[in-house]
Image 1 (cartoon, one colour):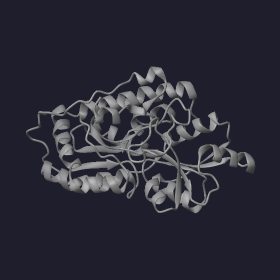
Image 2 (cartoon, helix red, strand yellow):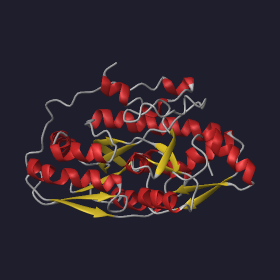
Image 3 (spheres, helix red, strand yellow):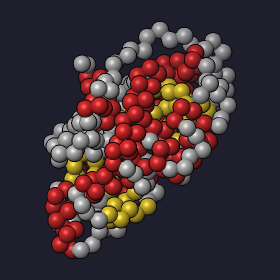
Length: 326
């Protein structure tokens, strides 16, 4: 298996039925580019607040994408419902390639199964993956615990529930599952995006938070501690951090920044944008952002991105069926 295929073993689930969902590396060669596209600016709707990981990754690509496509790339931040507001807005947009969605892949693959949405998982076509998140659960440096077991013991000793920051369906599913398996009481504290989760941890308002990469800078600065990787296997960028597999759990959570368009967008338009995305992800600016934000910004084209999204959806459906989600 190639490096790309290994990296994209969606969710890396220990459940036998799900580990069979392998992902084949599909090259993106010789796309049929649209001859008359684009002829005007393209808007990328980012489903999270400015300054977060998704927003920063997209903005790192805009200059190169504009140069490749010959038109301005406009970024519009539309927040709310853990990415659901923006996702619903793009689902209803004209399928002509001029309105795109950049979001956490779970906004599409998971959210419609666990909360009311104005869209369905299959309301999109997928242009490519922008980045793979390095999902982890972290806590403040001053907290008296440094591992999951120590967190549970601290909770038992204090008689208080674990307070966890929450801003999207994925973190809720992971936190609720872990707490249930550890028989630990849990209270979810709503925050605004990954930056809100970081601030809640640093201020001491919560005990723990889940993030796709925002945890790394504050851990490196000594202001926080990473407790465990939320992925089934260990993280590429933090191989010494214990994973869900190491902790004995049968599944883990891997997620991506996906670039998608409304269902019905012509394939030659999708291919044109994907070709520009592949070039843009190789830019120096993009790779600097990847390092700074603790993300793996490696291109995956339309076919592979669709495989990833389909596998995520199937995997989360099985997890919810097995575990349940509130």
